[in-house]
Image 1 (cartoon, rainbow, N blue to C red):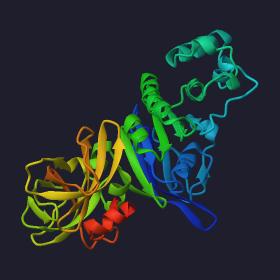
Image 2: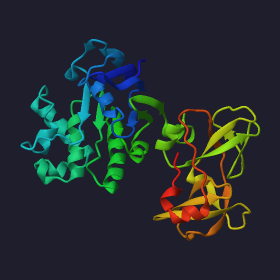
Image 3: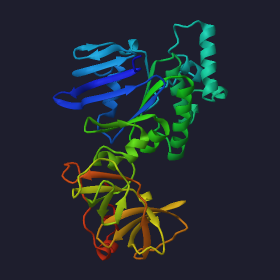
Image 4: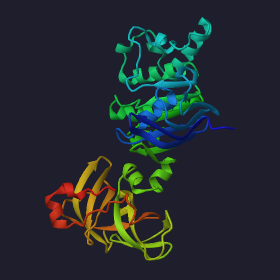
Length: 374
């Protein structure tokens, strides 16, 4: 059995500049993948090559084992069995909801078309607005109608380009879960482009982190967060800092936070100098702990507060505590590390950026210096 989608070492360019470089992706039937990265990294270009709107200069793209793109070869978009939901939804303003959903079903008999449209409107929960026009709908309703229209012809692969970018934060989180449910119900394979990691976590079975046209890591959300392949992935997925450290043995590493014991993400020889990823949840509040730190910045997040803490070593770490722990700037508090999976990178890796050494008093005068994200 072939994967439903195979992208093999493809590159694509605009003029002399490579937009994507030697990228590979694969999705099994029914899986949902996500391309995650900052603006301009090549996510949408990759999506457009899969859809057939952009040629590739090398590599291969296969859908259900059938080659649809290679160097100097391209199957037209309409022959690839691919549906696409655009960032602006691209609904036809002169057609009502049911006419929009039915737009790609010209090959069907009227009775079949009516049944398919009715089924999809029921799935997305918008049967009651079938006679309305796009301008009469909310952003969330328009997004779901665009999804239904793309699903109507039963595409083998559904591509979604920043589908929630026009919605507010609460609606984005809600719809990302709804869209996943709908795609799974229709037994469709999906690939989503986003720069929002929370959307990616909510929707995807596999996530690819892209930077400067290259795929850094194609993996599960869990592995991206807990086993990033490099500091660039670690910096884009979640929050944290890199602390300089030294390997003591196969399970012990020393850094400014403490001597940490746990499973290493990669093997390093004894005595090797490393940089250790410390996430906010790795630092636990404990009043009686002999390990002390000074609060230099804090951000209220409702149920939690994220603190920037200065250690006696001069390093800074982030800590996420329940918001009923209310500590003031300049206060010294007790903390305890709780790190079981130790993510570390060799110090000589060219991607690494070490946090600067900091002084608690100087940090108090300039809180912006307190953020030492990876």
